[in-house]
Amino acid sequence: MLEIQDLVVRYGDVEAVAGLSIDVADDETLALLGPSGCGKSTLLRAIAGLEAMASGVVRLDGVDLARLAPHERGVGMMFQQPALFPHRDVAANIEFGLRMAGMEVSGRRRRVTELLELVGLVGYESRDVMTLSGGEAQRVALARSLAPSPSVLLLDEPFGSLDRALRDRLVDELPDLLRAAGIAAIHVTHDHAEAFGVGDRVAVMTDGKLLQVGPAEDIWRKPESAELARFMGHRNIVEREGRPFLVLPTAASVDAVGGVDTKVLATRFRDGRFVTSVKTDEGVLEFVLQERLAVGSTVKLTIAGDAVIPLERA
Image (cartoon, rainbow, N blue to C red):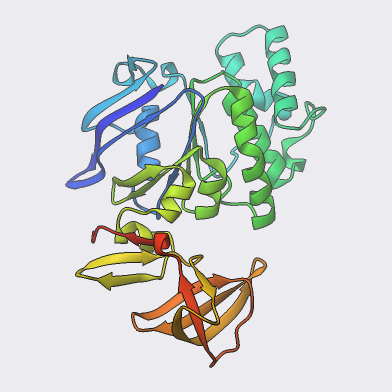
């Protein structure tokens, strides 16, 4: 298990990581979601020993990592750019760390074969890395990161440079690859869909602090604060009795008999449903509906009571 307790990383007077605490189980992938500059990459670098900690403790399987050099920590890293060695073929790239560790040739070859099967590149041993597609290069980079059998893998925006279709495909495949490898992982991203697709849990980070940690559905459906709700893209934040509430956009249905009168301001088709903006007594709200409503019309909407979530103001 990876244990992070009260971790602080400073750049001068700025706390890039501000007293952060979280655990990652041995077989868990934690998606670390947050905007650029919030401290996500700094956290990874501190875990790996590439950034000095001002205070706090990082333990891996009970061992205090502050006592170990980066190459002794059992931590692997994968970055946005594959950074493969252009003068080495695929096999030589994957086995590089094993060769540096002194593993014999036969063991290196077996490990390369295992990893190419794991990442779906069987038969690529002799391929020139300069001929690989972006997705193939990232698979090789993943295999190289996994080759030394790290206890935890840190992935820093690994799909950020790929096009959306390829990114979505790798997001679908990565959880199974990591489970098959049997290691813990922290996957950093600023993309909500990527975090939800990869993480067993999602941790949302802003300004060096964690806002909330939990399953993806709780992060989206049950945000604890107005700040988190806005970061997740929710627009239906209303004031009731002096405190903010979130009205989930999936909460409304058209009801010809009951419900409240609303005026349809706009509608657009997205992902098989209609995103519809309506004017209510509490302001303009946005709902996801199964049918297209005429702009300018007045309709009655029923809002489910359990889909109105109280929020902390911060």
